[in-house]
Amino acid sequence: VRNFKLNGKMIFKIVFVILTILIFIMFAIGVINIINSNERITSKSEGVPQSEINTISAANYTNVLKTVHDDLNSYTGKEIKCTGYVYKLLDFKDNQFVLARNMVISSNHQYVVVGFLCESNEIKKFAENSWVEITGTITKGDYHGEIPVIKIKEIKETNKPNEDYVYPPDDSFIPTNAIL
View 1 (cartoon, rainbow, N blue to C red):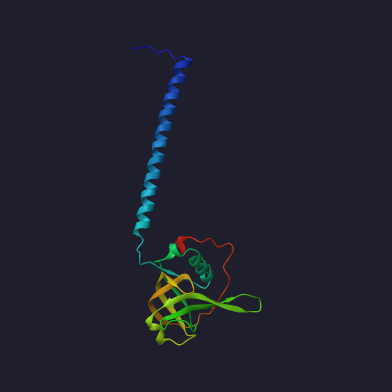
View 2: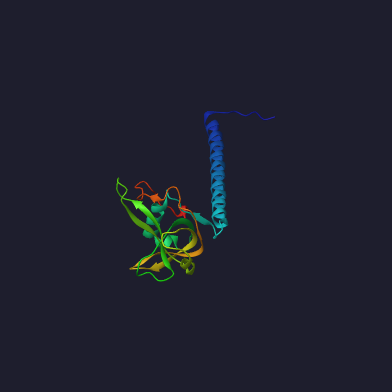
């Protein structure tokens, strides 16, 4: 049987060693949790299918339009689905049209036409000003400079939506690659 004498220095050393071990264990657990969470995030982003289609609504139409125009490289290759009416200009090719919406610019409902330039051989089947729903891929194109062009994969006639007007982009809108 041994008799231990504890003095102040001995108690301090024991407490110090125990606290050091606890801090090391907590640090190791934190590092393991960070590594595991990064693996989960990576696997989720890799698991998102490339064919996921992002729907554009009247509420976010101009925000998305502005964001894609401002940062075309980040959105090239993204698939989108949206509704608008067929709008053509004289200098368009036979397969080109704007998937248009009317953006209100004043309180007395004055508006300008805004939209994505689209390309589809199927557009010949649709009258100008008819409402269509499209699904397509954002690509880089040229119309008086580099702009986004939607290559149409699917186009079908639809009814005019209840909310056919859109409004200017929000100042509070925060563009992220996640919206598309």
